[in-house]
Every structure is written in structure tokens, then in C-alpha cells.
Image (cartoon, one colour):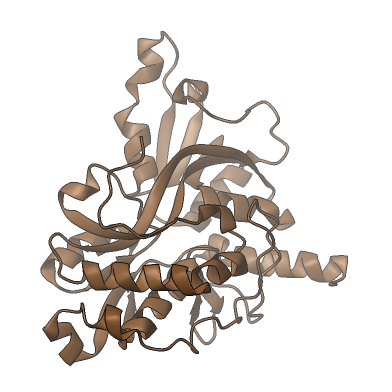
Length: 314
């Protein structure tokens, strides 16, 4: 067992990717996240390198990808447990997105070619061919399905958090509860889209509208919440639950608002989709999938099987 001092130190270390987007100090360990899925392990736990190639899944690859031997990933990095740097000095990537991308590539007999990119630039870059696959905890939405295909691997979604000492705001189940408040979120996300598309709900109810402030960096968002410049933070369920479990964050998770499937993002009509789907389903079948979720404390985000471009959750 770690001492309370060590726990506080590791909690602070784990929050650095949130505060500085791509930093987690030199300690590769992350603090235990007492989320609904159980405690997270360490960022260095390797569940992927021992995986063997799946001939059945690899047979579904487009010939040009098989010849190239690589998968080009455009990946957004920010905060745990999705994708972050466990060691800033060595730029060692870690997180749910990283583990699943690496595991799928192993099963397909391919090498990962990963490039860090701004969240809002990844989906447009798929169409140009700059990347084969995009990762960034991309939720499957009706709007995105018009131009992007997805291969699902977890179920996450939208949630809210407030400062820990803010007891006035209770779990948000309706955006009417946000009327008169300032809501912070990250730019180019489903959260920003949801908030902006439904700005009218307060005025229609005769209430003062909420204000939306979108930040390009998650660190700036958390700082604004802690300093009182925004009242509420809207982000991923898993990210907010993890963040709130760290004492140093000073935040309180308000609960789930809307669940979304999360998947590998692909150019519309990409022939990679069947191979990626087969690889994810192989991970589910052999138990690696559940071990990865357990590693990051998000067992309640499990899906029964991977799907290609399913409809958005109702």
C-alpha cells in the first residue's frame, strides 16, 4: 500500500496532463482512480506486446495496407485515462486509446505510426489520407456519421463536473439546470456541439441562457473551473470521473449526462473497418479487452462487441 503522502504526490503527477496537456512529470505511475470500474493500474503495465497476430483478422486488411505494414494514427493527447504522456521526458504515450490502438495493430501484424495532432484537425485529415485512423475518444454521433466511419471499442460519453466545494449544483440530467451558469468545455467536441445546439432551451423556458466557453486546452479548462471563471465543466464521463478521483484536482463529478459509443475514426467508406472490427472482437474474445479496461479503471465502459458505424445512442 502506498502512504498517503505518496498517493497525494502521484495524484498531482497524474493531473499534470490535464494542467499542461502533455506532461505527467517523470514518474510513469498514475494514481489509483477509484472510479465505478475499479482502481486503475500503472501506465507502464504492458498488456499488448505479447499479443500474437490474428491471421483471420489480418486477412481482412486492404492489400495496400498489408504491403505497407503500418497504420498511420492521428492521435489527440490530453488527460488520463484516454491518452496522455506518462513520461514527459521520453514522450511515452499511455491510456485507453493508446492500448487499444497498439493491441489492434499487433493482431493485424502492423506497426503503429502515431502522430500527435490537435483534436479538431484529426477528422478532416482522415479524408485527405494524412491518417488511416483517428483516435481522441471520438464519440459516435449522428452528425459525424455523415462524413466519418467508426469502429467502436468502448462506451463513454458526456458528463459534468464542478469544484469540489460547490454543493449548489447537483447531477445534471437536463440542460435547463445550467441556465444562468457559465459552462466550460473543449473546442471542436461533441460537448461544445451539444451545448451550442441547445442554447435556446433556457430562453424558451423564460430563463437566463447559459454561457458556453470553449477552450483549446483541457488544462486551461480545469484552471478556469478551479478559479471560478466557469461554473461547470462538460467533458468525457471517464475523464471527469478519473479527474475527480484525484484529490489534487479539487473537482466533483456530477454524473453521466449522455452515453456515446467511442471508436476508431476512419474516412467514410474506408476498407480498414472490417479488419479493425475483427481485431477488437478478438481482443474481447481472448480477454485482453477486459484487462485493458481494468487497467484504467473503466470496466463499466465495456461493449459486448465492436460495431461499424452504429447509430448514436438515443
